[in-house]
Image (cartoon, rainbow over all chains, first blue to last red; front, top):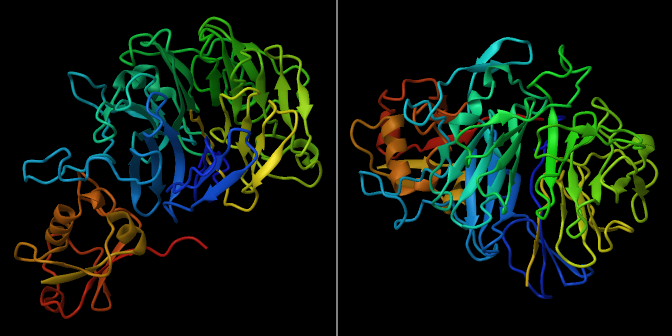
Length: 407
Length: 98
């Protein structure tokens, strides 16, 4: 689950805009025609497990990765090679990676922190809630980010916070351990755990990556993940940190960018919405007239790099919209000035949350915008947010909404 | 021959219908049964015990003969009735939650 309130959730959403009749999927999937009007709901899949995230490869839409996890049975990575018709944990078939016993190694759910002298970092400790130091311990995969160029390459953001990379379609994973060298001993868990939840890749500069961690902040690498440094200058956490502008320790909830303008980043922090115009070197607050600048997701319009969406939540201890009104806020000028988008959304007695990976846009024109709530609703807008329609209402809490726009 | 009953979530994951029968190396222990199970169903690796340490996951329990074997040493011999197939070894998701 992606909420720091840690609700109990089962299921996941993965939305496809496709030709009518596209169906037979094995995630909890929603499919629509090209006008985003006729939706088919399919599932549940991976029933009884929490599906923290699933995402398709940008270069091979048939390739979809899913993070399936359970407090009982641990982490499972699922992969579909046929657009969601069938799923398998990669590396479990006889033709997959073989161990010395001649059997599949089945390492797709093995996330080992790299403490080797050659490529790793010493597995030290991080701060705990009470200020004590705790050792790093793998718990689950929060986010899967497929490569922009290779369907077999995918990154995983995990708890306890680290980034892993697979170059064999998820069969095996290696930590990019340099990240923990970016003052990892000062990182601490947010209320949902110490999770790496955001991974941003960049087509223009393929070696540049951003990640975000609760509660550590945002970090950048310019060498494909080998070395990292904190990119938190300008963040202010007055009530969360003893040193409000500390280099690390900030509870960043989500960051995003428009692919055409990768120097410009938008951030939803624990409190505050911010923007960077220099690849994360510094940040400026752009909360402006938002009714609350606490929230989780942040998204950018597919065709308008200055159009940004957030969902304000009342406070860090009250995870529901201000005044019981579910409002998406849109800025068309890159921040500071925000308008409430309310048509079709409940404007009274609404006390749901929208989690950090539960908002996405499609590539159609006009741009479609989608989000899921902890109350089990998925809303869609076919007109860039001007009006909204519930696509489905009565699901478990929605952890993840992703969109594929199929030809 | 040892009969193993898995929790429904793991049967679904590994596409197993009903009980599993295994013939682990002797003497039969929790570890040798799990070794045999994971060879036949690689998908289950990491879901019952840790990949590397082989420690039982915290919310997994091993029951047999109306006893909780979870805290036995993983290399302790299993009861004769389990080894003989009279009683199954139950791998159970621990009771937790509301």
